[in-house]
Amino acid sequence: MFNPNTITRFNNTETPFYYYDMEVLRQTLQACHIASAKYGFHVHYALKANFNPKVLDMIQSFGFGADCVSGGEVKAAIEHGFSNKQVVFAGVGKSDKEINLALDGDIFCFNVESVQELHIINDLAKAKNKTAKVAIRINPNVDAHTHHFITTGLDENKFGINTWQLDDVIIALRACSNIQFLGIHFHIGSQITDMEVYKSLCIRINEIQDWFEDHGFPVKILNAGGGLGVDYHNPDTNTISDFESYFKVFKDFLNVKPGQEVHFELGRALVAQCASLISRVLYVKNGQKKNFLVLDAGMTELIRPMLYQAYHEIENLTQHSKLKTQNLAYDVVGPICESTDCFRKDVELPESFRGDLIAIRTAGAYGEVMASGYNLRDRVQSVYSD
Image (cartoon, rainbow, N blue to C red; front, top):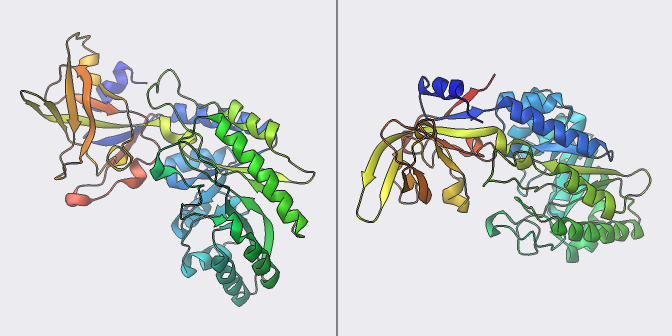
């Protein structure tokens, strides 16, 4: 990913910054587009993964829709050219202000996560003399076998409506005159690489859509959510997720009836590999039991390792280019006044020195978007390959 000219450019750029390889992004989007179009599937990009303006512009150029979880994301999607007829609005805690913004924007669909939310959207739509189109987000109680912090489809999670509440959903739908029921929505978690999990999801979707139709509510939209994972360990040799296998599971196991559309909401799989966090070594601390590389980037720039115990490949770009052979184990840490400000422990790297450039890979998803100004830090900047 990093050729000598790119590293030279980095040497002349103030760190830390996010480096976006726009060609990797383009190739990933192309692969997803081809694999999904093969089956006539609709893909909405999950803006929460990365809403960098240049990233959004390229994603929009491929014709994907937008999956939003806040009013700000709805606004950003429309401002960046996503058709309002391809914007869906999810989220367990939509405020009245956000719902009104989406109603005024005539978005495609609200993914509704509680019976109470159905009534609130209905009342707000009625006040505007509008009809709000909705899909009901249901917890299928399918275990995604991923980190418990990013599992979302179990009965114990805050998201969605549990199956034992579906009778109440039917009562609410019949009572809400300013609601148009479009379909059902699911999202069971993130960073899922086991395709068997999606087979289990398909079985539950088939059962639940039949239940709705038996109760007089034909299902037009089957929204399977997203969650497809990426290879954090091998960003150069396994750069693009297996979109073909992912979509084929739904083609083979989802019971799609005539006139139905199948929708997906992918985020991480589209953007994770296109960006790295580039930092410099500020200090090398050598101890009897531990060696530390103290970087100028920390949890304010990339919080995933501290929040989710997430793994990222870490490379010393300066010493790799010198073909040094001696490796040492380092705890790679940031400058923030928190003990948890550590990217990884015992990382094998070439012997490293003050000023060396460090790349933290696969940081395009939930990296820049989660950056903060904690410790009154300057906000991290972005640099692009083009």
